[in-house]
Image (tube, rainbow, N blue to C red; front, side, top):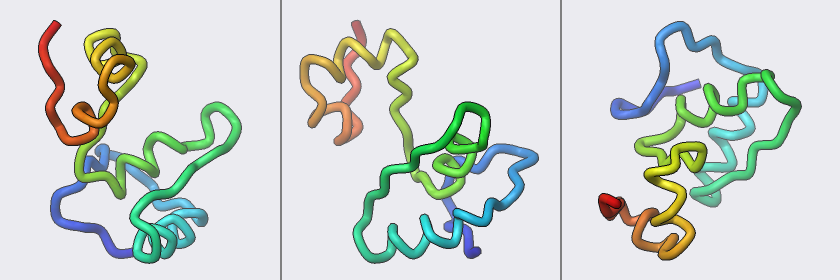
Length: 80
C-alpha cells in the first residue's frame, strides 16, 4: 500500500488486508463506505487514507453538520 504524504495516519497503524481494496476504490471513485464489527480498525484504516476528517462523535462538529453538511465537508466548520 502506498501512503499519501499528508494523511492522518495514527502512530502504531498496522496495514489491513482490506486497505488494498480501499486504496483501489478511492482511486476509482474518490469515496468509500467502510463497514465492519466494532473494534476491527475501520477508523484507523480510514484515517490512514484521509487528508482530513470531521468526527460526528464530537458535539462541536455534530450540530453544524446537522444544519449544513456541505459547509462542514468543505472545511468550514463554524464555531458554536
